[in-house]
Image 1 (cartoon, rainbow, N blue to C red):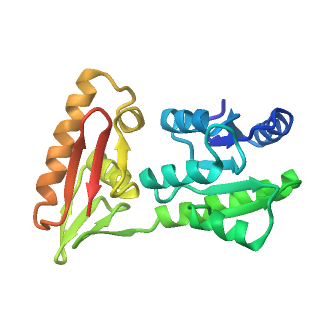
Image 2 (cartoon, rainbow, N blue to C red; image 1 turned 180 degrees about the vertical axis):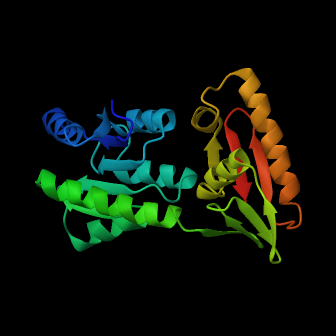
Image 3 (tube, rainbow, N blue to C red; image 1 turned 60 degrees about the vertical axis):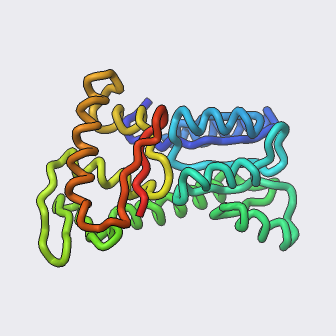
Length: 227
């Protein structure tokens, strides 16, 4: 698999359609995780941390709207596209109310789906690349690796900066421990986990001027930046 592939979770209970969409996306440098029901999709989402979700609405075990709602409780920014045979205005409105970013009616063309996927990814990447990120009363400059308090900058190390960046992307939601260890340390073994705990302590000290900010250890799952 190429390094620049985009992880995409596809939940579709029609096996033939799901396979066609999967193969079409894989031919365009997506790494596709295909699921046939909402419960399976939830498990795979937790495991692989995809970058975008394409969810059928009418699925067995757990429908797409319910799945999207649960995912939104953990991740407020991941792009979600709903696929559905329903097209009435109330259905579209319900989709957006449950956390969807886009809504595509079946049958659809693969080209239209791909255009919509890239449009959502481009939008989220622009937001992620913003230089000045507010964290409580602080300003975090990811590019310059600085945490600014009342116009006074504190220099961060590269790893402190990257860790804070990922915490800020998932603020008020859990940053998965295994995901961030593999992302920044390359492995989730015991020694790297202890090293990450040290970096979390350093960040807490640097954020202590604002009492509204907390980095909470959610035992067994990861960390949560609350602000």
